[in-house]
Length: 177
Ligand SMILES: [Zn+2]
Image (cartoon, rainbow, N blue to C red; front, side, top):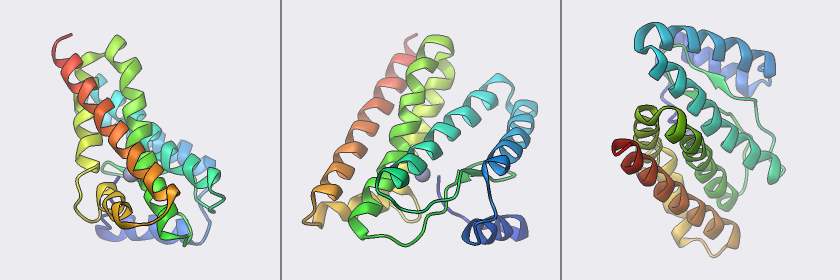
């Protein structure tokens, strides 16, 4: 998800992540709060979107683990969205880490197609939005990978293409379900 620090709550959330304060208990607590808030506002669709957001962030987190980059567990922001804060790393690794988020989110769209097609459509749109090549969205980091002479970056770009394709499938199949 994009990192848009708005207000004190957001600033504290990022600061805490940088300091290593956030543990998996934080993921559980902030995720639960987000779940309640979204279910009250959007109903079942809100619940599905929060779960898909968790998959998106786990994508970033697992990519960090895979590449041996220190990362905070996912932290949900009060009014929507979430983030994983990771330490400085090589630019080509950044490409893969950025792409893994939308890929994880798009994967969540597969079960959603079966159990809740409307949520699969929204999830696909959210993942595609995150793949737009506009800072601070994940897509802007992926785009840089096109000019990098690094297999890690290319795998990242390929992962993003796969995520976009999966998201499109989720949207189209969800609309026709
Ligand atoms: Zn992301």
